[in-house]
Image 1 (cartoon, protein in one colour):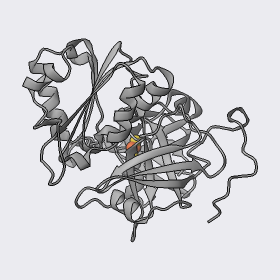
Image 2 (cartoon, protein in one colour):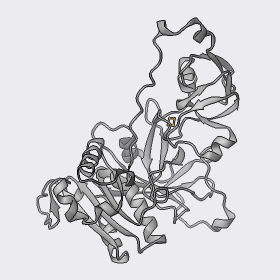
Image 3 (cartoon, protein in one colour):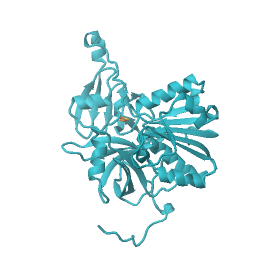
Length: 363
Ligand code: FES
């Protein structure tokens, strides 16, 4: 691999933004952060810069054998450093995608990715002061936001609470400690569950619980809260905040859980008229025309006909299933996985778009 610096490198104003439909990502570096946790930094394969909001995520197509998988990761990098992006992946027990990344992804490898997307960002939900609460790899969006504030708004008032099993599991610990020396209003609290042999721990031990909240963040009721971690952790935090009388309109959490299956009418309850009203979906690249029952999504119709449309969250969140609509109308009920200007250009999310009459899409 050529390790020399490029002879010429364009300035930002000479570059185009990265576009997931045109460009790939090339891995630049891999850094070990904690046991089973690594940060992967990428550049564009075409000298582009990256436009995103701190806290957003991307979906990666990972060439796992025997079949590629799609996995969504929050960006841990900050858009204030737009030449590269980074994700920090943790391989949990039984994980396939993150495990593949940790074991096989090395500098020089190229990947297809979709996004960035999502509205879990203090730029989308601004507040006067913030409380970040995270557990495990849920720290990554908070890190992106904190890095952005360090670069662009270093006076920001942040109470940053993160929970981990052991001290060595705290991701970004050294960098966060360094940032407290540059950001006068950044207050850190690490909570760990277990002691570690040979390690002196002078910080807090135990779970994140209601009695601790006023100690960790005395004015938490005046803050905008961002929370990210395992589903059970976020549920407990929500319950705790509600019990403490927090105004939940200032609470935001990141979740990649799949949506419930759409409730479709029972077959024998579908009237002849409804069957007759089935829309036809034409897939221009496959050259197939497929019936789509009322209430069915374009993704489901495609799958039924063996047409592959990449999809990850299947809840209108990640943007992976974006396809160009050539003609016809759809009812699209998304969760932020598509931008307004993409809708204006004619794109739809196949997983949450139901045809309203005959439709043609590029797939
Ligand atoms: S699969 Fe994620 S938005 Fe459709």
